[in-house]
Image (tube, rainbow, N blue to C red; front, side, top):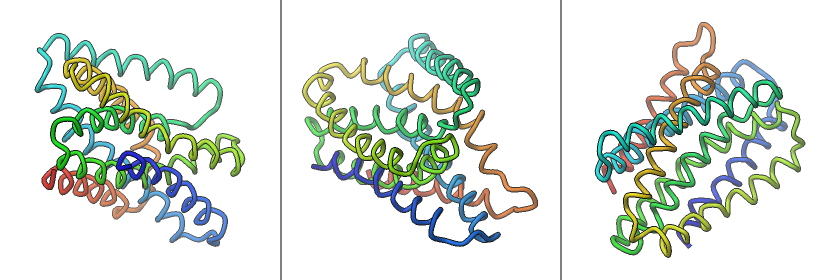
Length: 229
C-alpha cells in the first residue's frame, strides 16, 4: 500500500505537467516556473543520492566493491546517454527518476521486514521526490516526440514499479543487504552522471538568479525527510 502511494505520484506529476504545459498561457513566469521545477527536481534527486543511496551503500560495502559499483553505474549511463543523444531523445530526467525510484523501492520493501515505522516515512519521502521528477520527465518526453496519451500511459505503468520493487525487496532481498547496497551504489553513479551531464545544465535560465534556489529547496526537502526518518 505504501509503495503504491510512493509510485502514484509519478502519474500525478505527469497529469499536473500536462495541465501546466497545455492549459497555462506562454509567458516569462511560466518559463521561470518550468526551470525552477527542473532545478527543484534536481535538488531532490541529489538529496536522495547524498542522504539515502550512497550512505546506505557505504554502511555495507568495502571501498573497492563500492567504487566498482558506483563507477559501473556512471559508465553504463554514459553509454545510454550517448545512445539516446544520437537518437535525439530527452529522457535523462526519466532515467534519473527511475534510477532513484527503483532502488529506493527495493530498499523500502526490505526495510518493512525490519523497521516498519521507518519504512512508512521513507515511502512518504519517495512519493514527494517522484512528483517534481515526473513533472520534469513529462516535459522531456513530450519534447522527444511522445504524444500526451502515450506519455501518461508510460507514467501509469511506471507508477506500479514501486510496488514491484518493494515486493522484490521484501521477499527476496531482505536477507541480502550487500546486494541491496550494490544496487543503491550502482544507481548513484548513474544518477550523478545524468545530473551533471543533462539535468542541471537544462535547469539553468539565463539572467535569472532565483532558479537555482529551486535546487536548494529540493535538497532541503531531502534533509527534512532524512531527519524525520
